[in-house]
Image 1 (cartoon, rainbow, N blue to C red):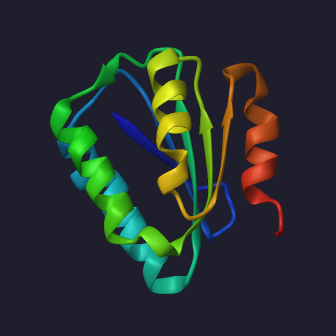
Image 2 (cartoon, rainbow, N blue to C red):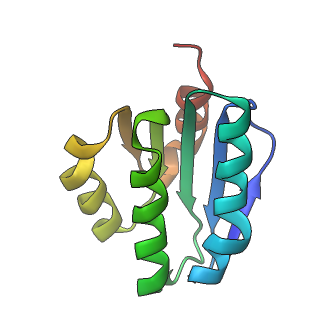
Amino acid sequence: MIEHLKTFPDNVLAFVCHGHVTKADYDEVLVPAVMNALKRHDKVRLYYETAQDFGGIAPGAVWEDFKVGMEHLLRWERFAVVTDVEWIKHTMRFFSFLLPGALKVFPASETAQARKWISAKA
């Protein structure tokens, strides 16, 4: 399940992933939020957190994540990823060269710092 957090600045898309994330979660929660934000802003930021109960991502969801990111590649300004999941940390760092904006990966113990960084004025 993907939870859309709405307590961030309007140009920040913030999500927390719980349990097992599916393609339907992307189609019903993440994609509509991204499309709405891109109507209002030239550049957006992404805050992506895995909760303690995170159980993984379905292959269809991984593809949807990649597709959404690439379709709007030049409109991403910053990425904050909060996770203790090793494969996610390594994947984000490995593909960071493809991202047009700044990326920071934070451990769960630094959630407050990640939220502050993603929301800070550039």
